[in-house]
Length: 217
Image 1 (cartoon, rainbow, N blue to C red):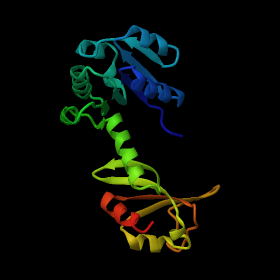
Image 2 (cartoon, helix red, strand yellow):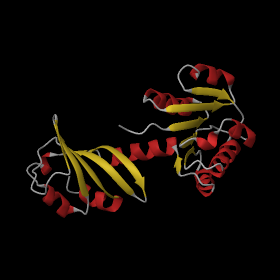
Image 3 (cartoon, rainbow, N blue to C red):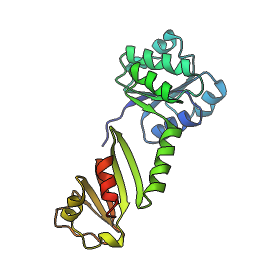
């Protein structure tokens, strides 16, 4: 069972409210903060605690013991200054993991310099996902790990049928993490495992290697 954690979500617009609500549904302790009383009221019965507060005021975060939380999500919308101040203050208070939403490339850069451990660009990341899927239609899903490393899920084509894991890895320096065949899932399948058409194949590797592999799919 996953260890229960305490999350503070700052900014309860659509993005922040979605994160906070889902974390609460998963059984985590969630403190939600927003300057808009209406947004706070809407989530009062869903989250562990929801409060109205101005996070640009360092005292506000201290009064809420924000520094004691395991993870903070700064999901503030258009107020870039507030997002920067909240990120900086949360890191200074000792929060180890601070995820922050960025609106622009410059915003991403500043958040990183202020200590955000993960910078989220919802529109940017969604755009990247759509572009990757359009460019590589065999890619069913993918996760970016940073430094051009990805985990991708592909659907095995007729070209891959009867090919072994070893054959596939000869095409590019990638790692086959799992194969799902109907209701059966193999984690780290052996090199002699043979693929069938329509197998779901989960692969990890550098973008350059995955591009090399795509030519053989």
